[in-house]
Amino acid sequence: MLEPDLRTSKGAHNFAQHLLTKAAERLRRGDYYCRRLGLHLSWAADLGGWWEEIDFLETRDTGFLLARLDHLWQRVPPYKPLSVGVVLLDLVPATMHQPDLFDTDTAQRKQLSPLIDRINDRYGRCAIGFGLFPPDVRSFKGHAAFHRVPESWEF
Image (cartoon, rainbow, N blue to C red):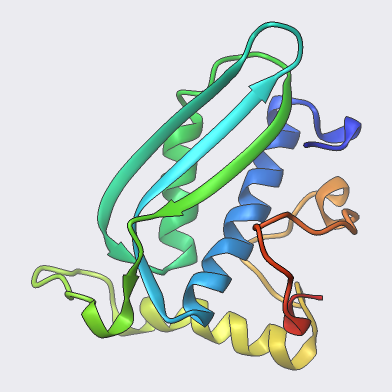
C-alpha cells in the first residue's frame, strides 16, 4: 500500500524502484539468481489490479533489473495507483547458475551490485545506491512486507 503522497504514477514508479533495489539485495544475500521480474499495481474503486512480468537470462544485477522494471512500466495503465509490488521469480541457487556463453557485461559491471552492498553494510543502508531516490521515497521509514521477519542488516 502506497503512502498518500506516493499515489501517483511517478511516486509508484519511484517506490517500485526502491522495492526492487531491496529485493535484489536480498537475492544476492541469499546467494540466488532470478529469471523473471513481476510487477503488480492495484487501483482504488472498481478498477482492480494489473500484473505483468518479463523473463530474461539468470541475473542478480540491480542495474539490469531496474532497466527491466522501466521496460515493464511502459505498459502500466494510466490510473492513480493504490499499491505497487515487485516480485523476483524463478530463483536459481548460485550453485546451479548457468553463466551466459555470450555475456557482454564486463567483470566490473557484475561486481557493482555486490560492491554497493558492502558499502551499505559498512556505512548504513542506503549510504550509496543506484541513483538518488526522490525525497518522498527516501523519507519512507516503514518496511516492506516480504512474508518474513526482517533481519538486522535490513534496518
